[in-house]
Structures are given as structure tokens and as C-alpha cells.
Image (cartoon, rainbow, N blue to C red; front, side, top):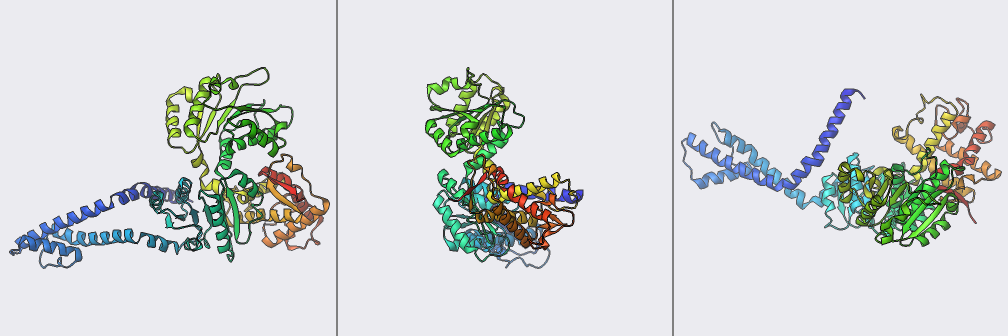
Length: 600
């Protein structure tokens, strides 16, 4: 793209943004004021114009006649007069019918707005359907529109204020029940690229997924991805293991989304307590051991174990909660290796208690170091901020970050960000707006299938590098965002096939709880069977570019194309490359928080 084209693109984006964010909302708010002003101006100009015209032509007309002729301008019945026309009448002859047309259009838009919305959808394809216009749905709809995607939202409550907001951002909103198959058909889910169910009830979201799956059974080409929000933590754990197995690669992919699970990943990515440079075992304090607090504890432990398997000691984790002991026992049951990695301490304590306000748990003692990082994951924003201020007041360290999970980035989060700029004492207070950080297209669409696809691509790049292969002419060897869409879909189909191989080995895919899962081994017979399946899959998909075999190209000679051969005719070094892919599969899945378990 040359500089001139890039400049025009930037200007167009800026103009579109200004129109959507400034001009269009202003016009919507003041449209009837504009209509009234246009009528008044047209009447005034018409009356003055006709008065001057009659005087210039030597004709006398009453005031009532002049007013009547002015009214006829709006229906284009009185403006065609002979002779010279003054500028007032000329302007009125153009403005009056334009005012009539604008008024009629606005009235039609108000009366038939719902019908016009449904008409627009008839021409949509490859769009996003969002079911439920709560705060999360609204954030997502706006984010997709900012990225230029077509959005259809379904909301049952016609009094929901977010319907008008969503439409102002250019999305189509259908008022109806998303569990009704006819409403889903009107939203054209058969032609959509993504369906996202964000209703507050898990059962409703599951029903939407079932109906959507039935509607797209006859779909051909690129499969539809259905993302289902599951709020209940235990239900999510049960469903995650079945996520890949319940999808049909040909027409339907199913993903599950939980804002707290994604929030834990995001908060640790932005504010990590453990990095590869960390040399000594840190002391992490987690206040509030709900779903997000538990996820933070387990992910911190895994990162420490991954970066420092031996010789650095155990990481110290202090957990403060009103039910800390019970929640600690639950974590020990779910993650058997947790105690081997962490020195866990549960403090049965309320953040409003005098014991918490004394802050004795922050300081170093004979057997433990001082707290180095604090994560506050309370459900109430006010209580979370009060706890954070108490921690900062009692802490003796000026370098201890206090990360506070808040529901959104407005309100208290915005207030304390402003205070941080002027108060150095609050510089280590880090508000984290949960909804804004997790309800983004990248987070919501980054489910299991997408994660596996990206990890498969990353594995391909790693093998290329290990084999010292040139990537200059390799279409696959580019960063994921730069991959053409058809190549991304190729990696997605390859990720879908992972489950088929695991099922063929009488195993199942489950969320990672055993941190030694990468040590899982297939038998030699299983490796041979799965390697053959791998070869057959890639022969069908034709995932080759310039003779390079995607998952194991580093082991193949230039120009070798085993996809064109039967398994029996493949050279031994090619077969070994396929077998090596299967051997690495447990470690590959462990990187994306999944493990292989044998069926009983």
C-alpha cells in the first residue's frame, strides 16, 4: 500500500469515526428540532418571497392568500410562477419540498423502524449475531462495528435503552426471543460467521446454541462458530472437556466463554507476578477466592513451575476470603500438584474486619517473605477499592503492585486513574476493568478451537526455525494476524481434527488439571494408527505450500509431498515426521490448558 492510499484510508476511517461518534448521534438527538427549523425557515422565506413577487408584478393578494400559496410550496403546487423570481422565493421553492421529503422519511423511519431493520438483514452474510444486549453484548456490538463488521443483535426487552445505542453504532437490532428459531432465521444465522449467546441464563444460552446448530446442519463451506457464555463455574468445568467433541467441523463449531476465566488470563498477562527473569520465589496475595481468584492462584503456580522447575523453592500464595479454608481444599482436590509447587496459606478473614485492617499478613516473618504482588478479586467494586487502599496504607513496600479487579473501567476505575496521575502514593494501584478487557472480539472469539489453531500455527513456525528452513516464499510462515483467511481456516480445520485422533485412541480431551499432562504417552500401536490418520487428514485437506508439510515440515526434504502418496508408499522419514507429531501432541495440548485422559 503506497503512502497516498494509506493516507486516504486513514482519512476515510477518521471521517467514518467522526460521523458515527459525533455527527450521527447529534442528528438523531436533534432530528425533530432540525425538522421544525426547516419548516419555519421555508414558511418565512416563502411568505416574504411571495410578498415581494406580488409587489414587483403589481398584484395585490391578502395575507391569507400569501400564506396559502406558501403552504402549497411544500407539495410543489405554487412555486412555478412566471417572470423574475427573487432569491427568497427561489430558496423557498427548493427548501419546502426538501423539508417535506425529510419529514416523511423521518416519520417512516420511526413508524417502520423495526421493518426496515429486518429488511437490512436480508442482504447480510458473514456477519456477527449477538443474542442479549446487556452491558457485555453492547460492548461487543460496538467493538465489532468499530472493526467494520456487520452486527445483528437480538434483544427480547423492547424497553432496553441499549437498543437505541446499538443502532446508533450501525448495528441492526431485532426485538424478539433468541430462543425462537424464527427469530434466529430472521437474523440469518445460516449465513452468519459467528453467533454469540450472552444472555444472563446459562440454560437460555445453551438453547440458542442447540437451535443454531440445527439451523446450520445443511451449511456448506466455512463452519459457523457459536460462542456460548456459561456463568456457572462448575458447569463450565464439565462442558469444557466436551467443547471440541460437541462440534461438527463441517458446519458448526462450539466454544464456551466465561468472563472470569478470560479475565484471569488477561490480568496475569498484563500484571505478571512471575516471569522468566524472576529469580526468587515471590509471595503473592490473592484477596477474594471466587472463580477469578482461583484461576489466578492456579495460573501463577503453573507459571512458576514452568519457568523454575527446580532449585528456586516453592512460591508462597496467601489467600484471603470468608471461606478461604473450604476453597483451598477444593483447589487441592482439583489440582493435585498445587501443594508441590506452592506454599499455600488460607486466611479466613473479611476485608472489613479489624484483623484485615491491621495488615499483619503483608509483612515478612521468620518463615516467609513479605508480599510482593497483590490481586484483589472481590465482587463489589467499592469493597475492592477500600481493600486496596487499606493494603497500600499498611504496606511498607513502595514497589508492591496492587491490582484491583473492577466490573468496568468507568466509575471508580476512571476516578482512581485520574487520582494516580497526581498522587504518587497511589502509583502502584492498578485498576483492571473486567468487562472492557474481556468483552472484546479478540477475547470472545479466542476459544478452544481458535487457541488450538493459533498454537498449531505457532508450532509450525517453531519447526521451521528449528529446521533452519527459509520462510521467504512460505505463505504459512507469517504472523497469525497477517495470514490470509483461507490459511487461517486451514489451521482451524487441522485443530478440529485433534479431537478425532484423541477419540480414536479411546481417550478424551479435558481441561488441564494435571500439570504433568505433557508426560502422557501413546502406545506404539496408537502412534502408528494416529500417524496414519494425520497423513490421511492432510491428504484430504491439501495443507501444503511449495512442498512444505505443515506440522512437521522440518523433517521433510524440499519438494517432498507425502500428501500425494498412500501411507504405505510414504518414505520412512515422512512417516516418522507424522509419528513425531503424535508424540508431541500431549505437550502441545498442555500449552493451551488441555490434557489427554484415557477413558475408563
